[in-house]
Image (tube, rainbow, N blue to C red):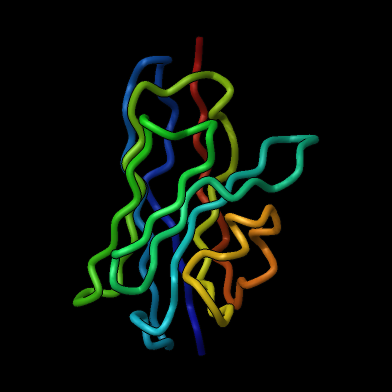
Amino acid sequence: QVQVAESGGDLVQAGGSLKLSCTTSGLKFDDYAMGWFRQAPGKEREGVACIAWDGNFIYYANSVKGRFTISRHNTNNTLYLEMNTLKPEDTAMYYCAADRAPGPPCYHYRSGAPSRGVAYWGQGTQVTVSS
């Protein structure tokens, strides 16, 4: 059984930092590109970052570029999202996703349909940024 579990969400002041983690089991981690999504109340789920299986390609949404860093550690099946200079508009539930779409890594993120290649989702971790 595949399990995907996020952790690290918290309440933080604007300008602060957080690091999210995502651990997986039951899947061959390095067969998957991995991504982070977020969804705020009343808004669509947004693909904010994606990393190829070997880390050699990374995608960021414009809204987080320069502030967030995605990374992965294939040996311990863990994905990370380091978030700096947080803003109130970053407040959302953050989800980890395993992507097994064929073709170029993170292709669907780049083409505007990031959910299309997702095979497995986590349950989410809440990030709240106060002004």
